[in-house]
Image: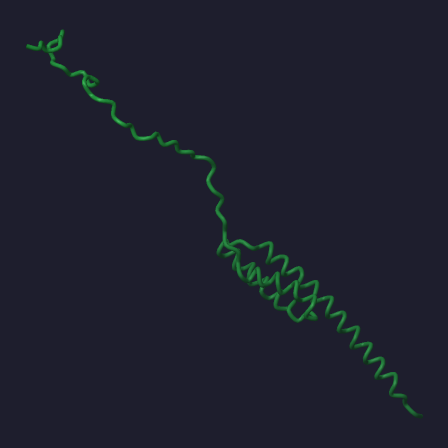
Length: 127
């Protein structure tokens, strides 16, 4: 007959490691809590339109520059209110819009004045 294992304290076999086969342990998961990912704010559509129209104002005789100014001011107010991105594009659209408007107004004034001088000077009054 087999003799039970020796138990000096009389509590029975309460060894938690006795007779248990090695169990497969789940893999240890290491979590990296580094700096958070940056929050990317969407750009305001009016700001993008303002910048594009400001650039196109160079080629469109200044007609789109006025729209660039309008869209730029609308975009800046929306950006302040909603916190969207694109304030740099709105500012670029405003600056380009104002510069192109001034340049094209001066060009148109020059050409209208030149045309008026040519037409007015060639009329030749007879006294």
